[in-house]
Length: 99
Image 1 (cartoon, rainbow, N blue to C red):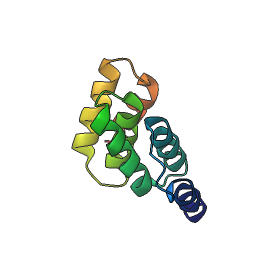
Image 2: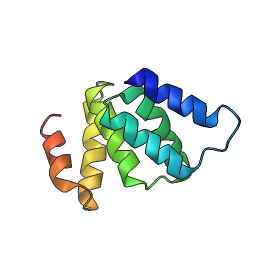
Image 3: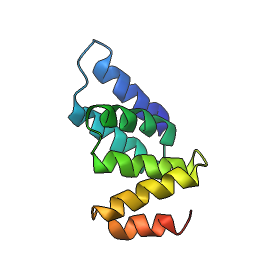
């Protein structure tokens, strides 16, 4: 669960090892898949700071805004933008139906 995931993250980076974009994406996906949205948010936000067009990070944030942060308007805008560029259209449309 969450404790093991956080332990593994800490173990990997406690020595000062640099966090790469690849590792950010790994942890973002891992936390997202486990519905650990608070933890996922940190990594998705960091990814978008260096690559504002990362569609997976935008998708993760849209789900987080919808399911965890109670911000359906923002989630709707993000899902719509993803649909406009052809990203994961069916799943985005399904989430739009929940907003």
